[in-house]
Every structure is written in structure tokens, then in C-alpha cells.
Image (tube, helix red, strand yellow):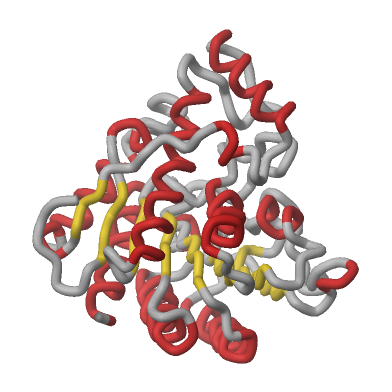
Length: 320
């Protein structure tokens, strides 16, 4: 780590993780990281945060969530360097296996620094790959760093109740179904109604399975939903989290829910991201000893990436 900080907020980023992308012209291009850095500079936040280098996750760590055959398939396709890892959204390229492990490692590093007390909160821009399932790639997401972090917090640190909160326009299906039967993984997701947007899941009736029925919260919104709709849904999430009393919060703050994204149809302003970040900092202080890791997630309008993600960092700094 290097650099001064007001309130011990770190940004975990480096070339390996920043390079996770699928070529210029693909919606998830490698220029998304630079868009985020521009947003930090425009808000004059660079000097107020700590910049921390990520590490690369081991294969064993990735397999805490993912099936070994899926990890092996990605490794093989990475060597081949062409083709697709799913049904046409996520192309293979030489080194995709290493880049995907770097994203997971960046997220694990953020969690480790927060748990160690080195920082109070952390933000990882190229992260939040919430569509990857235990056994497959999906929707630009090769390995699910969100889910691996949840497993790490439980295995390494003995935490029990971990909250995953997602405001990306797309439903966080990889996390939801990965822990659908686990009552200790709290799940709250505001997203565009799956009848209108990939991956087509996340109905309000999906509240968990088996012993976890009633422990998950899916809040789909209609295309065109705005900040007023977001605020109404957010109040429900605040109640849910305060009643559930998590020990750690993982926040996926995809910028594709802002108005003007080329792939989605929600119409939030940056104030939605600001409200969510400020609220989660307050809830983390109340229940989690302040422990919060935010992950960039989706977002395909570069200006929105700059605005949305830097606003989250700003609120994390302001919260102290």
C-alpha cells in the first residue's frame, strides 16, 4: 500500500486485474479501469485513498466456490486462446485463466485488508463478476470473485453471516443460486426485471430454497425505473439488513443501472449509488465493525462507470 488516506479506504487494482476484458469493441473492454480512474481524478479523490496491489488467487481458492472441472476448462481454453467460455457472450483469449484468477485475488486481497484492520473499507473496480456459476462461465463472468470472497470470509475468518448486496442492473444469479440453500448468506438484490433483461432470473418470489427459504431478497424493477423507485426498494433492503445483523457486507455496485447504459433499461442517477454506499457504510458500522468491500461489477457506458464508482468511493470516504 502507498499514499495518504483520510479514513483508511483502499482501492485494490493492478495491471493484471485491470486487464480483465474482452478486447476493444466488446462491452466489457479493458478500458473500463481507466474510466474509473478518470472519475476518481475528476472528484479529486486519488490523494485520499490508499492504492493496494492485488494478488493472484490460487487454484485452491477459486475451487472453494467453483467446480474443479470448470476451473480446468477455463485453464484449457486459456491455452487455446480462442472460442467461447459460454454460449457466445464471453470469448476466450490467451491468459484469460490468469486474468480471471487476478480478479478473484484482488477481491480476496480487499477482504483480507479489511479483516486485518489495515483499512476500514475497500473498493475493487474490476470485480463483482456475479454471473459465474459454480460449474460454468456466464455473462462476461469467468470466476465469481464475490462468491469466493464469501467462502474465504467463512473458511479463513470464521464469519457466519455475510451480506451480499447488489445494485447492478442484472440479477446476481451466480451468487443467488450458489447460496440459495444457505440461510447464513444474506442476499439483497435490486435489478431490472428478468422478463426484460439477462439472465432472466431474480423474481420477487425467489427467496431461497430449502432451509434458506425467506432469507433472500430479490427486488426486480421495471424498465425505466428511476431514483424514486430505487429509494423505495432501498428502504426494504435497509430493514432486511438491520434485522439480519450481518458480520460483513459485500457490495456489488454495477454502474449499468445508471441511465444511458447501452445494455440495460434502468434510469438511476449517481444518487442511487450514493444512497446505497452511504447507507451500507452506516449499517456496516452498526453491525459489522465497519467491514465493507465494494466491487465494481457491470457498466458499459464509460462515463457512467466514472460517475457511479467514484461516487461510491466518495461516500465510503465521507462515512469515516
